[in-house]
Image (cartoon, rainbow, N blue to C red):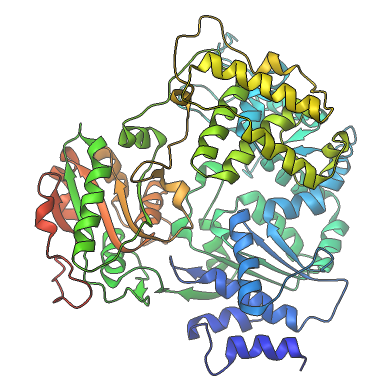
Length: 627
């Protein structure tokens, strides 16, 4: 046994193992398996342990293991555990792969082999990564618009739809489907031939969406089974983390690999945490691997995040088949979840009320610290919570809005978001593309190294002026500063900076900060959507329902293991906190559904004082949970 094998074996299976017994099956099982893990179960840590165990015993230098996840954050978390717990840093030359499903498919299939699917396509297509690029640059081009027939007479609707955000479903006849935006429910289905032609035009222009990338990869594997065998031979073992968020096309890609040289695949996830249905996620496909394909099931029901009171209350509210069992350090916390009633028109008071609740609890000895959040389902609810709404100034270009976003994020010390927004503007201006993307061919037009490119982008963020000035003045100052910076680097934009960073005619007087579409981190309590906190662990959280309709969508139970998307969104929010869970319901919802929250302590916005005495640390007498 090598030194690495001994180190990994001792860390996982030694006298003081850091995994619980229910996770050993994840590390040692050989064959196709599905891990259904509850929130806070430590599944990513177990995945990293399996990966470390397999890599330490791996002998081939030509083949490897592919560890795939739905997001870059989850993939980075796997790398973090490998570094921290096993001192393993996989170099770029490693035969193994850790990354997203999108990057894996693009790197091995749709990127290098797109022309194999359609001969008139360019050698390589660029992935569209930024929504602003899709709706701004590409969405404005007529050749990428889908038109709709309103009736049999052939009369055309005046509202065209953008083909870049049209996705593919694996229906029996394989149709392209388009995402309805708000107020578009009455639009008829578009002409499939028109979609296909517009999609091909998009591809010939060297652009494709992630959905397109998956579809092209799937068709390539169908057309050339030998390529599926080659990839499966290169990566005979695959681990898919967060697989509840994968689509039917992605599952079919895995099926094509399973038909060839793929020896085993491990899928890990929680169908109840799938909240990306708008992005074609189908959580039921994960469970079908157990029910239909007879894969080995592994169920993790131990929650290492939340208290017993939160686990029990959430399990009962959603009628979950496999209840969560609290195994965390907060398991004995005596603080029950709180149901907070508020007048319908006073939603903006909720962040301050949440601060009062947290302060009251902390006075009794339970430290919540600063790790807390107020969340809601939609961005418009978040705007109502903050009491602020971004000014809608007609005629502003997407570049101006992204630059304002970059400045806001910079001021709030959210440097990654500031950098990303600025990089999107510079890429579209300098290279005519959305982003550097998965490859860096665009930097051929940048006469410096990639490191210098990053410095250049950050310098552009720093030159953005103060937002507390008139927007017209801010735009003029910004355009001048960016022109000066481009001249310093001897760069010529594909389109004049003044043409895209400009003031619209008749623009009313308004502060630059007023058009920001991101909440400020300087608020005493940060307000976010549920999607923004998925994957995080918080000490305290408040989930806000806006009306009775919201609560109605949560009810009905999820004994089928999947539930509805609205139920899963609420479930994700309620399973984020360690110690304190508050669900805020308006008066109209409380009248109908307050009795449907067993295990919750009821109070109202004007009776927060009744919460004193709920928790005096973890030594107080246990409260009786109703229901």
